[in-house]
Length: 284
Ligand SMILES: [Zn+2]
Image 1: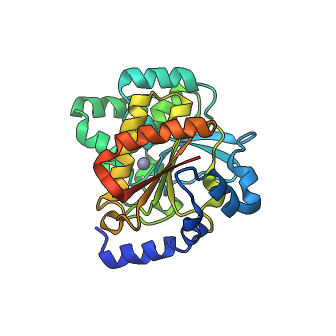
Image 2 (image 1 turned 60 degrees about the horizontal axis):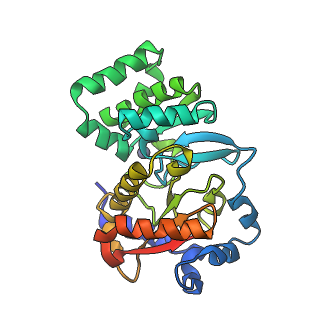
């Protein structure tokens, strides 16, 4: 596991972006003008999706889409959805998503690995092999855990089902740290064009992007996922104890418009009540 020194060092680095330096400019919970002001010219890109390639990637802040891609961010590429929800998702998304990308050290794959029955795990693996997954390339990677393999098999099968290509990102292809999550924000988005990637590092700190709501997952699941991801950030898997009232974790709800953003914000508050003032709620 990580040590406190490494954690604090990364925390200090994330303090250096404009978001924290100008934070006092946010009045109330509506952060749209604030984000626009700190983004400068890059603001234009934030709500512009087309003609980018849509890629289904984990909501994990360490997996960032490429400059010509649009990230559909769902924890473990939907590995935590129930079968019924997954079938619905597949029907909605077929043909739209061009690639499914798993990654090493996936927390959602870990949750699935610990909660799925052996029989179900075996089934996913067998299905992946039947569909022609070549394991050698991935198994040669260092640090690939059993949970990672499950996430990989699962994502490969999903890619086949929705007729998309598949890839896996090992640790060396990810940003941030292998040992812990450095996310200080989660964007909970119902806006099909919202993409904050161009603001990362200089303007915005590392952030989860959970936008499954607009790409076919139900609200019940989206709320559960919001809780899981916030818990990761606020636990020892993330900055954990470094979050407090003065330095909260930010949950930013993004709607199609401000009205919807505000509604989502109220829902997020209810879902994350247990974390008290360790979370600050904003909306766009
Ligand atoms: Zn993940």
